[in-house]
Image (cartoon, rainbow, N blue to C red; front, side):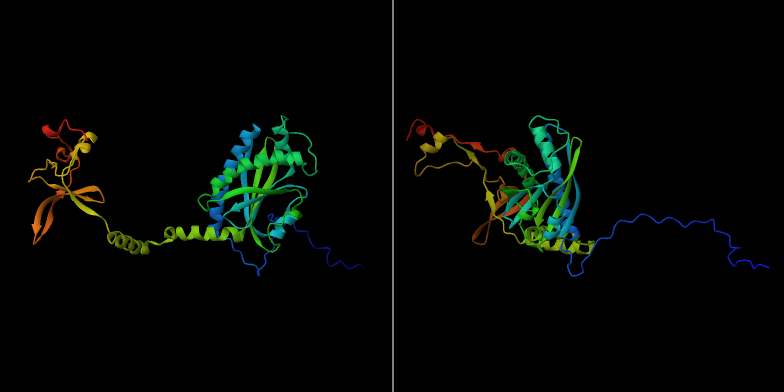
Length: 336
């Protein structure tokens, strides 16, 4: 007599395990190297690079006479060695000086975009199979002209951060030859998606972090008031009021002005009397740094002349219009 197998009565389960959601690949994080690019810095660079992307795309469209679009993909902090290792070889690298910033920057364009731009620039359609070789000297010269037209857009985009004067200092095809920073130096890498007609590629702009840091910190310091809480608003208002009230200004009491022609002024001699046409009972105009502010009456306090505030000044009053000056009849025909 056979004994049933202990697993013969097991019924397979009809339930299936829920599928796991697709997860992105983990990224390596080095705890010994702290990130120096704060959220505020990233936000500033995002605004700057979006401005540059719009200007760069508009410039490409006007130069190549084709449909182009440039958008930001990412803004990251890397070592320069990591940036170089991730770049294709060959590629198109343009080395830029960003005076007064120290160091140099790298503007990288993929070969697909470079050859598409050259084809359109020379009257082609920009489509078809492109070679995978480095650009020739003539092709580099043509692309240099396009990059030079993009430099004003880069200057305009960075104006809120630093008034720079970007210039081209070199061109390379091999990333290993573009040594603008030490391998371990931190750099800010901005990736752009460039689309020209149907051709798409990823370009990048690499700027040493040590060059940008002083200007990013200075920009953050000027925007500190934006981060103040409501509890500090009164304190800030008191400080501003104190500094304004302690500012010295020039105060003067002016009589009614007189209009004179240039010929009348040339006929004036020593001893001449110029009537002011200002009545004794008419108020004077009290000006603060040349701005009419109050009406004032002339008087005396102790042994000094003084004025008494009579009210706010009415600058539209006809009594404040300059009166014409009439030269005496016996002097009207004399010419110096």
